[in-house]
Image (cartoon, rainbow, N blue to C red; front, side, top):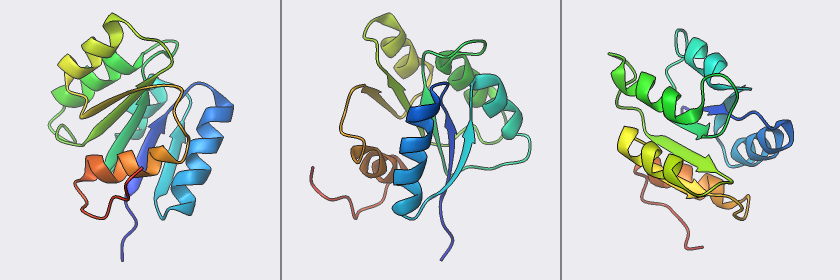
Length: 128
């Protein structure tokens, strides 16, 4: 069975490593990028099943990345999970720009795999 590919854009290395480890343990393939620019470049060769994006990153932030992805011919319809440690207008901007799910940090790290499954439309989501 093919493992679903998660393209993960997160500028904080500890969060990037923790979420990547959890997703890998849950059976996902993870391609990590340190910012929105790297993620946008990765989309030239990768066709992820889901995009996991931190909203507050230097350079191309998560909202701008979401806008760019939604404007591409492919993978414009990829599910996008957006996360942020900050509340405020950028959370609403992420939703308006086309994020499938918007989550405010902190949350229990293990929840990320369930949310990715939810974004993929899988039925086998455990109750948390």
